[in-house]
Image (cartoon, rainbow, N blue to C red; front, top):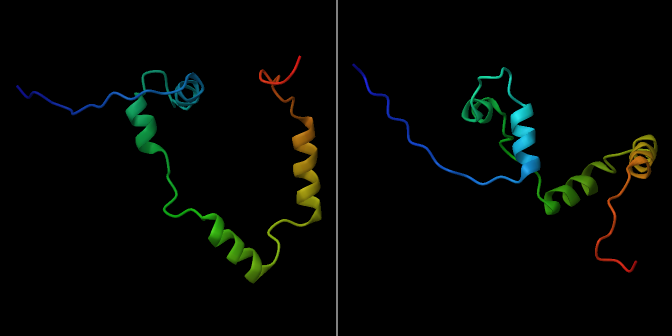
Length: 87
């Protein structure tokens, strides 16, 4: 008889993060560990400094059509109520 002993860690997640992780399951019995293990993580991400250097070398990343699309999407989103503002 083999006793499989697996080390575990307890983590805390925001409810939104938990729901996203739960919805990423490929099948209902898939464990959260399996979901995380099949996730892909970029090897390298750009820092702000690297992005500025890249833009200076290559020019703007987005053209006018892309920027207009971003603006349109931003204006289509309903912003949450400002709970800190004056009412």
